[in-house]
Image (cartoon, rainbow, N blue to C red; front, side, top):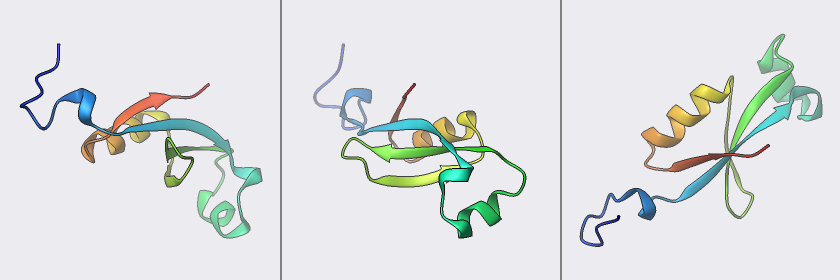
Length: 75
């Protein structure tokens, strides 16, 4: 149950999507920064705007929550 008077209610936090991204499909500047990693994780909005790329799925969820966003995994 949500409380409409509580501004930090989980249901009021924007949803972001966490999805794996193959490093090989990224621009060369990002590939160079990824080192030996073959996969990164993108944090993106419902509209498809990419907000961040991070090294692993767990970190993506942490970053989203630290920014008052509700992370959802995309398979």
